[in-house]
Image 1 (tube, rainbow, N blue to C red):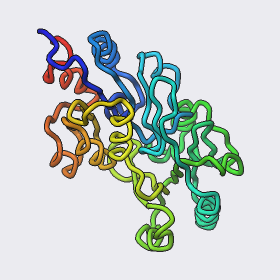
Image 2 (cartoon, rainbow, N blue to C red):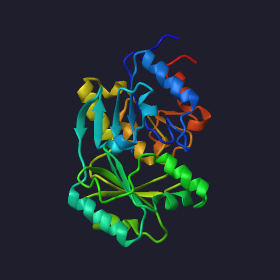
Image 3 (cartoon, rainbow, N blue to C red):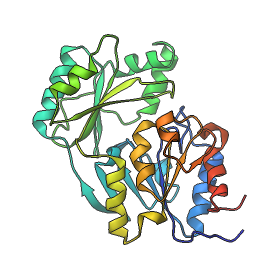
Image 4 (tube, rainbow, N blue to C red):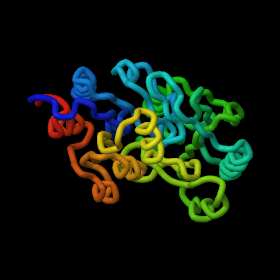
Length: 279
């Protein structure tokens, strides 16, 4: 099959899209990305992860750049196109609220992830219990986590915290109105498990448009791939939007193409369907 999209820009969410929910890269997905790049397509990650959480195994796919922190950071060909962080005073207020509620949390920046000491144990509960095996799995998933949240507060893209029963996120959102947005995300794909302090007006869609302008390419040439509610703006900003098979209804509603789950070779199937690579 000849390639009908020689100049497409592919924007891949990471967790649940490029990687499965065990943070493993399916062999088919890695091969699909490499083949797409060999055909002249540009490939960017478009993720909630900050740059510090994009490990060498991902860069080794031959990426052209990164949209990180849910749109707070844009990098292309090694050049920083745009970067914005949470104000220090907002970070301090957020940390005070989380500490008051005894929450496990981590600050996400481009230079590091800075978490509380009990983060692995609290996160392991989401995997089925705070067993030694699950705690080890969490630590392996955050291999460079620095367990000291007093650091990095001037360069925070966003903050994540483990959800606990009884938290009033509506009241939290009201308390931080005009300063930060409050959202949730899933580690396992089973539903909201983490809360998040994010930047107002910052999302993947706005970042995609910045990238398109930087590249001098129309958004119609962009293809976005995602699996979660935070990918709605990504898919609607791109000329073509692809949702993974386990995506929530609000993402499926804006998708042009629906494929299978990441662990069912969903990414490569979508690439073939769109004519990006041969089947």
